[in-house]
Image (cartoon, rainbow, N blue to C red; front, side):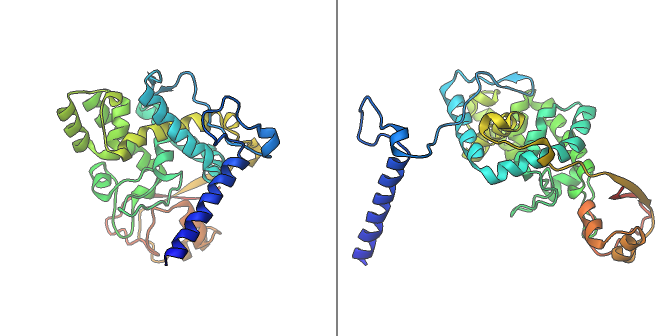
Length: 304
C-alpha cells in the first residue's frame, strides 16, 4: 500500500514538473530571467485581461481595491477558460437576450441583469437545480408562486421565458426598493433577502463591496460581472465565434386555448408539429395533457 502511495506521489510530482517546464514557467525560484517560452513550449497560459474600468447596472466597480480586482480576475479565469460552456453561451445569447432584454427594459430593470440569468441557468430554459430551482431564472416553487407564477403538476410557469422574466423583474424591483443598490440586489437573488439583512445588521454596512458574504454569494456577483465582460467582447478573451455561427432567434406564433387538451400529442399533430417540438417551445407544459378545469386562457407557442 505504501509503495502504491509513494508511486502515485512520484507520478504526480513528475507531472507537475513537466507541466511547469512545458508551459515555459520558471520553477527554479527568484531568477531574474524566466525560461524562454519559445525554447520550451509550443503553447503557454496567461491570465485574462481585467478591464481598466467596469460598470454594472450603471455603478462603477471599485477595481482599485485589491479584493475587488482579485475576485473579478478569479471569475474571469474560470469563465475565460471554461471554453466549451462559454462558447455555447456566446452562441445562445442572441436567442435569449432577444426575448429577455425588451422585458427588462419595459419593467425598468437594468439590462445588465440579463447576465444574472446567464449565471443562474447558463441560458437553459429547462434547467432544474438539485434544490428544485427551475427555469432560466431558477425560481424555487415558493418564490415563484409568491411572484404570480402558476406551479403545479401540469403547468409550471418557471419554465415560461416571458412570465418567469417578468416575475424576476418584480423580485428585483422589490429588492431594489429595499436596498437601493443593484449589486446588493443581485446578491440577494442568490442568498435571499433574510441572509442579506442579517449581514447588513451584523456588519453595519450597506454597500455590496463593503459586505462580507458566504463564498458562494461573494463569488456570485463577480461571476455575473465576468460573464458580462466576456460576452460583450468575446474576441478579447480568445473566443472567435462568427455571427453566422450563433444560434438564431426562433420565430413562433401563438395559439390561444381556454379549454382542456386531452392529449398534447394530438394537439401538436393538429398544427403539423411533433409532441417533442411542442414541448421544446413550451417547456412550461409539464404533462401529456392539460385539464384546465377553470377555463384559463393559455398562449401556446408553435413554430411560425
